[in-house]
Structure formats: C-alpha cells, structure tokens
Length: 256
Image 1: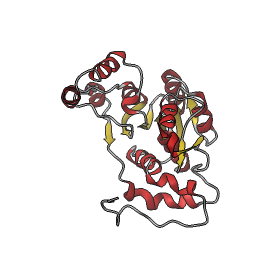
Image 2: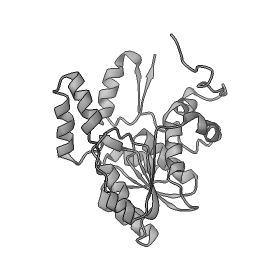
Image 3: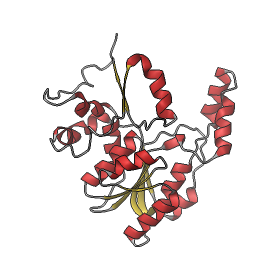
C-alpha cells in the first residue's frame, strides 16, 4: 500500500489512554474545532449549531468549553439528549431555536452559527427530486449534470442565515457540492454577514485539541460519543444504520 505524504499525517500520542481518546483527532474533532473557530465568536457570545451528528456534537461541546452559550438545533431526540449532557441548550425545530437564541441575545440573533448539516439536510423536495433524477442518468451524463447544474438542499444553510445576527458569521462545516446552488444574497448583504467554509485543515488544529483530549476530566466527552462498535465486515450495515438514524446510532467505530 502506498501512502502519499506519510511523513506528514501521523502525530505522536501517548500510550496511557484508550484509542477512543485519540481516534477522533483524525477527522471530526478538528473539523468541529475549525467550525467553531471559523464562527469568529466574541467572548461569552451565543453560538448556534445546526445538526448534532458527530461533528455537530463536538462543535457544540467545544463552544461550551470555550465559554460560549450554545443553542443547537436537532430533530433527532437521542442526539439532543447526548448534547444536553454536555451543557448544550437544545431545540427540535427552527422556531424553537430562534426563540431560545433571541431570549439570550435580546432579539439580536446568534453571534455565530455553525452549519454541521450541509447538503444532506431535508426540507426542499424539489431539489431532492432533482438529485434523485440524476441517479437515473448514465454515469457520464449524470456526473456532468451535477458538475454544471447540481443543486444542494439548502434548508440548513437558510436556517443558519436566519438565526445569525447582523454582522455575525456563518461557519459551514457541512458539505455543499452543488455547482449551481442558489443562496439568498439579499439576506447576506442586508445582514452584513461573513461566511467561512471549507474542508478541515486537520494538522493546523490538532496540537490545539490534544490538551483537551488528554485531560483526565474529558471536557469534550470523547468517551461519550460512540454508540455502536461493529466489526469491519459490517461496515455497509453501519453506514446504512447511521444514514437512516436507526437504533439510536450517532457514531460507529469499526474494529478490524
């Protein structure tokens, strides 16, 4: 097996703690850390987090640890319960999240909002139908269509733009891949918003996170995320269970 840049990716960690303490340094912890940092929060500000999947869980917990008041929006009950254990205020609907944020900001809106959902959000059936339609096209044609006229489902993005206050920042850690996705430029312009986005720069952040990971108090709850452990040959079933949010699945660890 050839591993490009193998001298850059690995980092040294201790031997005393379990693998779970370090496992998430490879992806979701730095992604969540970057998402919160990109939200450009003021001290003791109010942070909104959309989606409490693995990245959203950590983004919300990081926000709490950095001294922000965090309000998270998530329709799945068990995900809200998990986040609440770590000091996160949770809401199941957009209107409830807006009310909670407005109560904490005197109606100003959140100082920053992390969209940890991205194009997987629900809510726009027309766009969802267009996505599904491309799957019936021949591969080359379908791929070309997505590259040129691909549309993302933007309900999470629109929710973030509504919840953030004037002059605030929306941080996109959820993936958007459409080449022609419409966004409400009038709202962005009128509210003077900053939008930051992009894939995570893992090695830029890992040294900032390690002290939290190695803290015996486990402030980010790295040992309170995994809901399922399955052998590697059950990976397809694990992905299906996570996608369909079955059996309280929040995070799966595959153990070879």
